[in-house]
Image (cartoon, rainbow, N blue to C red; front, side, top):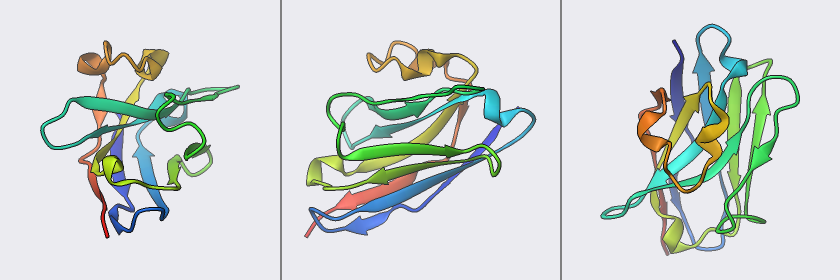
Amino acid sequence: QVQLVESGGGLVQPGGSLRLSCTASGSDANVYTIGWIRQAPGKGREGVSCYTGGFGGAAYYPDSVKGRFTISRDNAKNIVYLQMNSLVPEDTAVYYCAADISPRLCDYSGSYYAYISYWGQGTQVTVSS
């Protein structure tokens, strides 16, 4: 069992930056793949980053956020961060932290999203002037 708690959302102007945090608790949380998936009003879920679990974990991004978003993982603290730079209004969404033992969470086609084991409650990010 893994519990996920997000923090760090808020209102930011276009071009600004924001850092989200996802604190994971539970046994062996560091072996899980953890990712950030967002959902804007009236739109489907969209993955924006993920970090595979265990030794030798790596980060993966969809083309839509490469160069702007950076995911990092502190296994000692069981916290995953999402640093978002050069934000645009289209980044406005509820951002969810998600965890699964399978690295298929990093499949940005979204085909695995219905099977993800654990979700946080979400944090709102609004990019607006």
